[in-house]
Image (tube, rainbow, N blue to C red; front, side):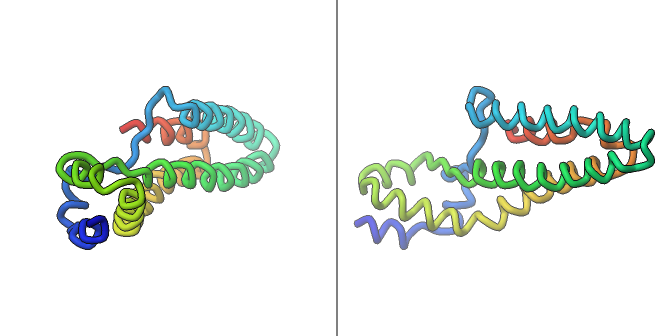
Length: 153
């Protein structure tokens, strides 16, 4: 029965409201940790940008290195968070009847189908943040903190 349900899941069901990508809660410990990390990086980046203007650009070069590392860390976290799938509605009722093994198999199938959409969304949001941080003078904005907060929506 579980295999039959897995095979019968259509792209329409996956695209419908029965399958929801993962969202953050402001009370999640990983969200709080990532928000703290992003805030610290933004403060450090502001200092490096300010010192970089005085020191002839050295601070900006170091700041860009921090921004690339921060981009990789936050983008990976966002991707992992978005790939945690919530299943509701009729599909959830069918899955509960089949057992945990079937649920895991179906979640893997759904994850494969939505992975590109999630990756595109994460790279788009993260890309905007890193572009803002790398542009001269714009590194003073708290784009990493704003990026982490955007996971709530």
